[in-house]
Length: 167
Length: 387
Ligand SMILES: [Zn+2]
Image 1 (spheres, each protein chain N blue to C red):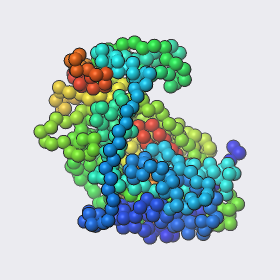
Image 2 (cartoon, rainbow over the protein chains, first blue to last red):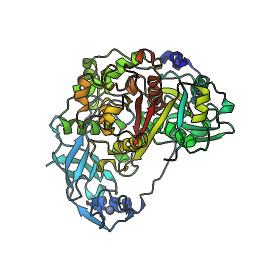
Image 3 (cartoon, chains in turn cyan, orange):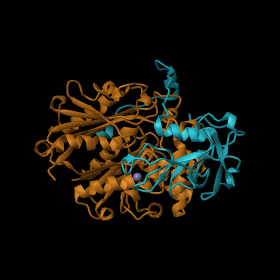
Image 4 (cartoon, rainbow over the protein chains, first blue to last red):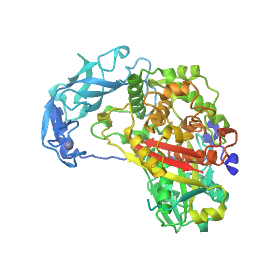
């Protein structure tokens, strides 16, 4: 059984530095269309509202806005504004950036959370971040409310909500 | 059910390493050659090939399937790339099974090759684009976020501690000491895991598998070919796969329903009615330590919320009632995404043939299972093997 004699050895950091290699740093640019449904969702955010889609067949009120109900496989039946409050379903306290670099000791920790939005169907959560809270005091089940950017600074983006804070 | 029987007759694997000098095609070649040699076949005997590999962003190579083609022996053959994120490594042999079970061919080579180190300094950045570009990416998420979120939800639901979870990392990293491919095998203790750097509370550095380079391969054949080649075929008795919504924040993260659905499909095909009694050795996907527990429950191998207790009691140790990840898993052997899943299927193949060397579980197991998982907590792939 040759699997007990597997090939390859791997490079040490020193060997890797010395090895001949070609590097490339891509400078790609994309413009992602918001689409029909998310376009409405973002317009709602710009106006300070969290919009959800309704499906009259399954009765769900869903976030984010969607053109079709993925369970019933039919068009949704319009949007309603739900509350900008919710309940923390789960959260993390993150010490690293998106590229795996570490936060400096004095930088505030990122606190991503899944927030179940009040007024939507049970379990309909969105991912956002918590702020204005001591990380040690965050709990599952905590009630939180959106903290919006001032109207003039809103551009129709998920970060028109700066963060959610306990209330 | 109208399917032809499909046997595994050979397997190959490279070392899993942080940085391979070899390219992706070179690694694919090493693993494929080893698998064909073990099966006693030449490339000319192979009719079809399926290749599993994770997102192109790791290698920075567009059309990675075509790039890896020559190493996987695909020149001038019916060759295709398959992909379901982190679930790919177990989906690849399922895809190969389709080729042979359907009668489309008698000999299919399954290859998985992954080179994550090309994306440097760390491939973590390549994961950013798995999040929704409009509603999630502006929040600058990391992949660790969603695992920390899922792990906390799981811990909270069942009242588990970080130590309950960390025992999986201890078991798997120690198991991997006996695997010739392993990258991060270590005699770590519970204290080591709990005291390792906190990345995203509750996830610590040693709760996570590493980024890796590596390849694995496997030869699948029809029944009449298997009888000519070996007196120790291992049969693919059941396959299952299932994908859940990408609206990942709208489902309860404490339980992987899509894994259960994939498992039920595989069990039905394999005639397994009581998986916790009939599956004798298992390789669930363990890129994070809590995932092994999560998956054991989704695979119906224990009661919901009970996997941590069973782990603490040694039930999932190599000598336990149900050995889990006797290979050392992604946490110990390493995690070159697609190659990891196939490494797990190979481990079950070796265990059922009683060729796993120092890793061999006692009791001459006849039935085993491997499973992989991926993307935004939404993909389950399951394969059941029998000797
Ligand atoms: Zn509906």
